[in-house]
Length: 212
Image (cartoon, rainbow, N blue to C red; front, side, top):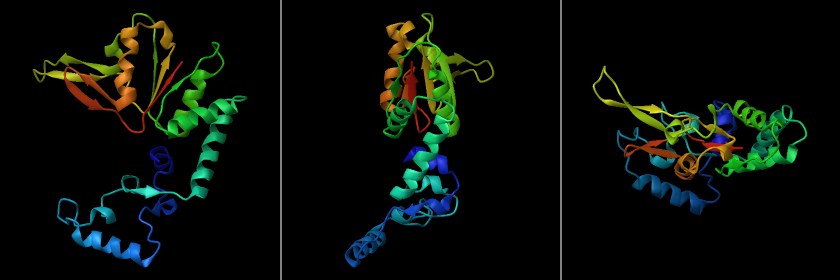
């Protein structure tokens, strides 16, 4: 759902309300919930389930799509990627399904057959922030997650983000690096977050790792 919402952007006319009232009984319960809701200035004077106040974008509101809309958009995305990566339709479909399921992908294949191109095609099609990191043996976990460095201007330790801070991370040739560096990917894949010096930093959503 997050991937679809990000793709549609401001095309609000394609959204449908998540709360679909199907009969009078449902409508009555819906109204009772609204009356009991805590309506304050903090939530913009709106019931949480009817949140549609000024300043809240369509993407931030709870939305659903009809099956027809979702299917059309999925076919559009697949066609766009397939026009770049030719002859790997089933692989493209499986990668796309993994992304929709908020999962991560390990691609095993011969060198030079389009693994990196596939990741880049998905990033551009879905308008995602994309980072690529090579994994030779000398790569450290801090290259992936980030690290803290002392700043002379502020006199404090400041966090410098690593390659993991993006929507789509291509971890290239992951088998070449050390197990210690590979383990740096575990938290960010499971929790979409990284912990450095005892502080946890959330990663952007949606988030997916494509490893080769």
